[in-house]
Length: 90
Image (cartoon, rainbow, N blue to C red; front, top):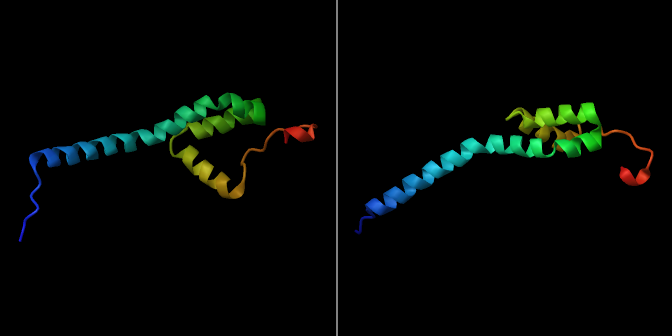
């Protein structure tokens, strides 16, 4: 029977891949924070000053923003958009 021995080069590549995967996994929550900060202006325009800042603030907190967005995916917006008289802007 042929044995599948891993070469030193193959072991190094696998170890490096796991290290890179761990590093990316640690950065994922903070990527959401960066996106939330980038979308503050859009939220303020859509929801108004107070609701927009609160919505963006909640989204910017790692894990809290993820939980909020999961709830909003199934239940709709937790903080309603501002009311407009123009039917085209809804």
